[in-house]
Image 1: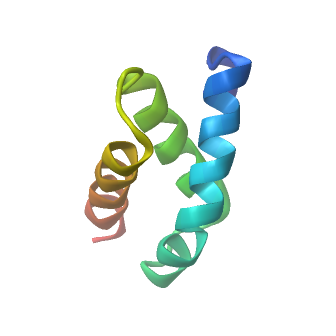
Image 2: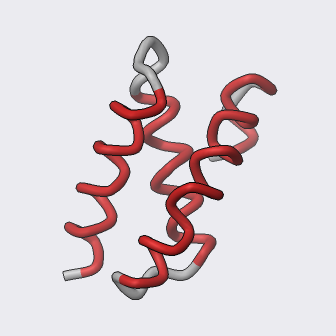
Length: 66
């Protein structure tokens, strides 16, 4: 997925991954899975702010972890 993101979106995904890494590991997700969820959220929500993307990514992570 990261090859489909432009450089700005990739930077956003990196920044959000840093913010969500502890959460992701607490729900049992490996970094690669967390990264793909965040990248997909960034790609799907191009006009959203960080908090909206973080909320969507957290919900997807909780869904995947169950």
